[in-house]
Amino acid sequence: MTDDHDWLRRLWAQHAGPVYAYAARRVGRERAEDVVADTFVVAWRHRDRRPHRDLPWLLGVARRVIAERYRADERWERLRARAALNGSPADPADATLTVAAREVLAGLDDTEREVLLLSAWEGLSGSEAAAVLGTSAAAYRMRLGRARRRLRRSMAEAGITEAGED
Amino acid sequence: MSDDRRRLEDLNPEPDGGAGWAASEAGRRAYERVASRLDPSTSLEPHRSRVKPWLIAAPGVAVLLAIGLPLLLLRGGGTADTTAGPAATTATTEPATTAPPVTTTTAVPALTEWVFQGPVLDKQGVGPQLCMVVQESLPPQCQGMPVIGLDWADIPWAESAGDTTWAEARLVGYFDGETLTLSRAPAEPEPVEWVEENPFATPCPEPDGGWVVTDPALATQDAFEAARRYAEAQADYAALWIDYLVEPSEEIDLGPATFVLNVRFTGDPAGHEAALREIYGGPLCVTLAAAQVTAAELRSIQEQVHLGLNTPEAVAAGIYAGHGQTTGADELRGVVVATVFVVIDDAAARAWLDAKWGPGLVEVTGMLRRLDEG
Image (cartoon, rainbow over all chains, first blue to last red; front, side, top):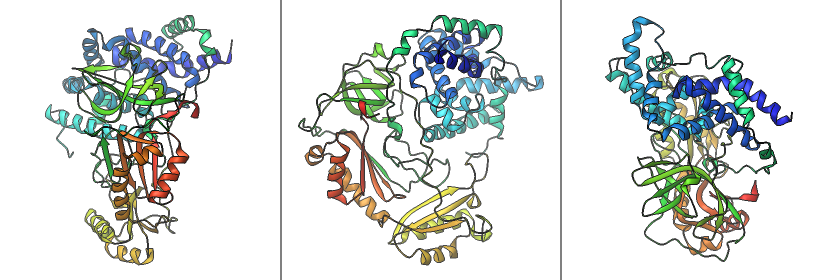
């Protein structure tokens, strides 16, 4: 067992769960396992280039793995729509609004949705999310502001929230 | 927390974030699949030196983005986006124009491999190009340096729309004064190294009692605008920026109590501070510009640099701006910063820039870095 293998085990123990959650949120649970396996194989190949922070790097790899495995595939649209529409509302009384909110989310373009979800679902900081997307923290914050304004507008138009200031 | 943000979090289909999955049976199964696919020979791969990413290629150039706030956009390169509001630092981009790029091969070392990391775009009928500035349309558009030998089959993460294919990639090749000819297979972009330094830190010591509003009646948006108008109207005005005392967010009201207004002049900081105190009651720091260059002088130099970089003289100094350049006036540091595709030799370029515009006044960075530079 080499140091590299130890490194991979530690990486797995620490980050396989969040990578799995990231993938499951985007392509569903059954495909998420494939994505996680591919992600760690790619990470292994590129381990000599790993940056200081592992999770944003792994999520960036997972993002590309998903793009490579599924985006060219005609199933992508269906997968994406389903991933945005799955789950169940925390409060059943909230179900109608939740379904409407999911539709708003599904209606955003890929980049806007990813920018929002890296913050809201993955709980990443601006610089971590930027690393996932391979962009600068400043560019990410700019995109995030833009996506939030778009989301707010769409939610107000769908009657989910009250129209607020931009 | 805003309503839309809460809604978004409510929709999270995996709210536990995969907790426990790695050690679950499914997780162990997936790990075994990974272990069975490890290729030990890859550990023999030589360590590749990390290339400075193009996004932060210009030293000292930083971006403060505060959505909805009035200040700074400092950027020497990268994507053009002006949604951050008015900029205390101006930036100009110069894509390839109708004039043919100025070229010579005399100063170009033939056997040096160069690394480009950033967006590459291929529009049918134009051919693949390294982008300096990307227009974020769909498909995106860019003008830049032609790249030879690119096979999109080597970049499976590329995206396409209409007649355009694009991707972020790390490309290595030889530069001949005109194009980059690839010498190795394209690779995925390497993770960005983050520069954590904060160029907007307030230089004044914190006053006794902390950074507080001294006159609530003059700590308003109108008073802030009045202070800004005063500063910018002064002949010795050098820079103005704000340094947040809180983490900027859309969730809080970012009024004058939340930041230190920094203003810099080339003379009489005490007199200017007294004048500003008459009109502004928020936290304030007035300093003397060490570089002794006013904002107006800097903008004038920037215009000269913009015209001066795409010339035979600049090429003779090893600065290749023929396929595009960006210039910006970094008022905080009192320097003009520019990004071009290639600077052959930083020391030779430095000597030419110092002689032409004054020592240290202009900094030019190449987007392509030498492979052996690390």
